[in-house]
Image (tube, rainbow, N blue to C red; front, side, top):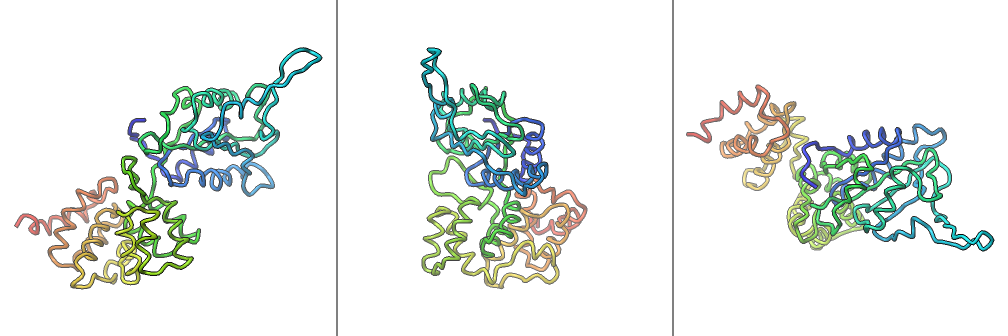
Length: 349
């Protein structure tokens, strides 16, 4: 599947998915591994749909189909003989729901074999399968990975794809952070995700090693709560995040008490802590983080903080905002124009 121009956050995906489901269209959520697609279905979509059904706080998953482990007979059922009429009858699977409300959840749909994909055509579009009819108020939602995510899947059957409203989700560090605050993730890892957004957003399907995602950070959080010694922290982080991310995360956690967070700087540029004079890495880290995360609402505060640093860090900030910020529009406000002009001599003198 080609690179998409229209990007969807998890929150946007939920809003659109619920609308499609309410008008009877099946929905397919696509995205990289570990970004919480299944969780969105089971928690957020199920909760939003429950608003239409009195007595439910969250709709149940009535049928959980992992198609990577299924064959076509699992959907079509098995034949039996009617000896009186001398015909073969099909017995539909007993797991299929016979009443709503609830959700039929088709997970790993992009791993479906061709025979299973062909069986799904009718179920998804016509809401029938041989003698089986999907009950009223039963919604069909599927999840899957993309070809570029390197998850060993088949290219999605075009005829199957067209039967869904297809919503591709982009991982968002901020969305994960918002979720993490209410779901028991240790504070150090939330701060690490704020400082290093690529821990959530940097999945690369071409990399042949463990990689950091929201799911893996959740696992590391559980291990830290269980009790991990400092000497073992790098190894534990590497087990789930891979070496590249672990080398960043483990030292961050060890010195978390002294870490300067971008959110603190944006909120209090005049009083936020400054890096220790001799800690070059910490100073570069906060400057780069501010350059990446600044937007048109807080670039002035970021400039005010950077003015408290020495020339080499102001020069780094001046160079980094236009090259690293891209989508956040930090270079549009007048505050940036004024500050960059005032400091231009740092890179031209």
